[in-house]
Length: 228
Image (cartoon, rainbow, N blue to C red):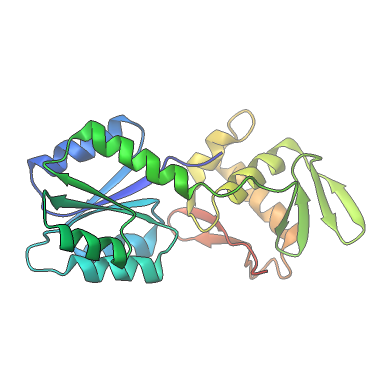
């Protein structure tokens, strides 16, 4: 199960931004509003994002530089530029710098929602194969098995639910409360910690220094796939 998509809205703190943020929240998105490049970088440092909505006019700050930064450092994030009507060459430059789409101002919430959903569809990862690598082991979620070399160990429902959440949300910090709600019979948060520790003993090369299922201080846990 994937968490609700997280959107960062970058631009002027005005009534239009409030309306756009409220419309996105109403549709089930998690929205963070920031005023410029520095707070955008700070927001990305503590939690992943799926889409950035970036105003072209940031009051003297270079939006093209931010587009290039996002394309270079966060290529998995979709970026939609909010720009004034016209300015054709500036729009071409924005697309070349890394924008996935451009929406003209004044922004209509219904159109923006459609554009956000379109970008998210293009960002959806391919279907997961039957077997996934988690740490030093292979996990077969369909057969509910953990494969360590030639040995196969059955997985219980709680472990399968956690592994589905982790592997569907790579590199995304997942809150313990959210993980608790998605496990069978809504496990208690303390039970999630015990289940994660049990998983680490099975899949990590060094459970005391976990690399696959990492702790994110103040949030919960994050799954980091191994490089192929």
